Structures are given as C-alpha cells and as structure tokens.
Image (tube, rainbow, N blue to C red):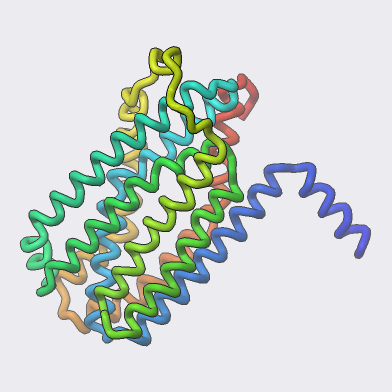
Length: 303
C-alpha cells in the first residue's frame, strides 16, 4: 500500500495535468463548500420571501454576467497562445487593452443599472431599488475581474486561479453572513456578493502583476499589431454558447420570481440551489484542459 502511494505521488509530480487537475478539483470543491455554507446560512437567517428575492437577483447577475464572461476563454486562449510562443510583448499589450475596455464596460453597467433600477425592481416585484443597484455593482466588479482571471487561466497558473476562487468565496461567506446577522437582511447578503468580485480583483491583479513586468510598454511593444478586434470576433460564438447555457440554468428563477407568489418563489429558489451545485461539480477538468489545448495548438502539437 505504501509503495502504491509512493508511485501515485511520483506520477502526480511528473504529470502536470494530474497535478493541475487536482489543484482545480480541490479549489472548486472548497468554493462549492463555501457557497453551499453561505446559501444554507442565508436559508436559516432570511425569510422565505427574502431568500426568494435574493436568489432572483443572483440569477439576474448570472444571466447579465454572460455578456462579459465570454471574454474569459477568448482572452485565455490568446494569452496561452502568446505565452506558448514566448511572446511577452503581446501579452503585456493585450492585458492593458483588455483592462481598459472591460473597465469602460463596467462603468457603463453601473450607469445603466442605476438609471433603470426602478423599472427592474418593479418587474421583479421588489420595492427596494437599492437592491438592483447593488446587483449592478456585482456585475460590474465581476466584469473587471475577468482580466486577471483570464491571464492566470491562459498562463496555466492554476494555484493562483484556485486561490482567486477560494479566498473570495470564504470572504463572501464570513462577511456576508456577518452583515445579515447584524440586521442588513437582503442588502447584507448582496454585500457578500459585492465583496466576492472585489476580492477576486485584488487577488487576481496581485498575482498577475507578480508575473508580468510592471514597467511601461516599450515603444516597440506599443507598435505591435495587437488589438481587441480578434477578441471581439471570438467573443460572438463563445458568447452565444455560454449565454444559452446560463439562460437554461438561471432564467427559471427569474421567471418564477416574476410569475409566482413570493412564498412559492422562495421555496423554488431553495430547491434550485442544490441542483446547480451538482451541475457545476465537473467544471474543474475543462478549466485545466482548455489552456493546455490552446498552448499545444500554438506549438503545432497534437491537442
């Protein structure tokens, strides 16, 4: 038995695919545990009506975020390709361009949600418009977090990527339940969701800047023919696929909140939460496979 364990450990150390998959499975498992604990805590601390309201807003975040989440795989593929070819200049320039564009998109999201917070709240049978504004902040912060996430993913920094998932989920669990516990209700629960992407941004950019030269772009790098055009072209098919999946897995809660009485919508939200956790468990494997396949293809190696 000891010999078998030794051979398994040696194989994992040699095989980066197994090692990286193990890191992501562990990270995904911890994130799911923290998210489940958060949801179970909210189920106990919020009323059924309040929980139904919160879950409808979170589902709105999930659906709305699909307009920016497709940037993750498209950017990650570009980063993986450039890094496989040892082209650091294009990586640096693409990072700056992506941070600029997604930062502007985040500002636009905040302004749009703030302007239309009244009609959106009315459509979801919610009387507090500031819930909608907090939801917009979650979406905007998540948009900015796409850039470091994509870089860590494309550069196969899976320890950093797992950390970028686990620590924010833990912060959401602790601070979110604390805010609910002291009486902030749905606002406190949404505060946990706001803390999540903000923590991701801090961790992600710290890990990214440690790996990327922080000096200003050299003149020759500024002249590189790198634009966001290829990213936006890849965004369209990726966005259609991911948005369709998000609608299938989240829009039911939004419709239930709109069409059903608050009590019944709350019960539906509790049941739906358990099903989503089971659905996303195998996601760690695809996270590891994707950048490796892109890097192999860039090096003309069978992927």
